[in-house]
Image (cartoon, rainbow, N blue to C red; front, top):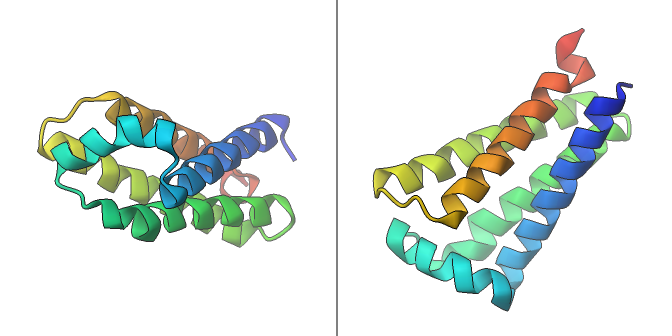
Length: 124
């Protein structure tokens, strides 16, 4: 397995796991930044658990399963995270919200794209 794929996937797993649990638990330092951004984008805070937090954590779990020997799940999880962040970025662009959360979503999107691009199941 490629070292770049493993490292990128582990970073993507860590980032989405933290972000997902921070959203689901409404971690206070995160909410100071995320709260106003949600309001600007017209996204209700009730979505922090489902779909926002749960989908990020499920994506991270799927990527971990991919590393542990179920490559089709890892590929599907990376694809799902890409679709999730395309929707998140669209939500921000739609209302011209270019706050810190927009740029953070761009980083998460890039990690998911890089994970899929380096995925041995895709590159074979």
